[in-house]
Length: 212
Image (tube, rainbow, N blue to C red; front, side, top):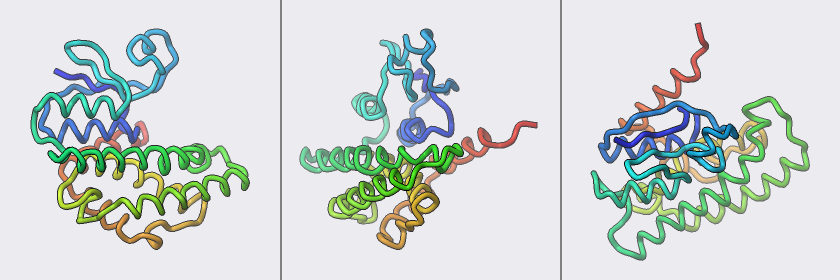
């Protein structure tokens, strides 16, 4: 059985968790935070989450893990069968990672951890995100899913990256992405209705609840 290492609040952890649930695969969750301790570095060399433990050893990096899970042929695949359309899904994933989630991450400290960012930093991130969302709008189909009629792995990334980023843009930048591109909100709402996502949100709520 696959073991999934990470914690319920991590967006990348939840991407992998959603894949496992949607594919109907059995897995065990091992709660762990990012760490530079030697014991964890022996499992995840950069100390990041998520990572998975398989019968053959450990794997790190979300996209690598998802591709591995897909290659096992268990449950449905969320890649299109057509090679070009599959490449388009991977293209969307890269845009979400590099041009939306990564720039917004520079403001996570400001929004979530009480570490104020400078106005110059906010302005820089804003410029990058405007470009990122404009590029995404050119690639996204919202038909109703990001790549077309069928849900793909790009939607998993979209839910747990863009969903977080829209909170950052609103709080730190006073920018409502939903007003800029209504398709973003419609897709987020659609994905939130899935049973897999409801289960993940319930686990998140438990993890974030105040300890008695």
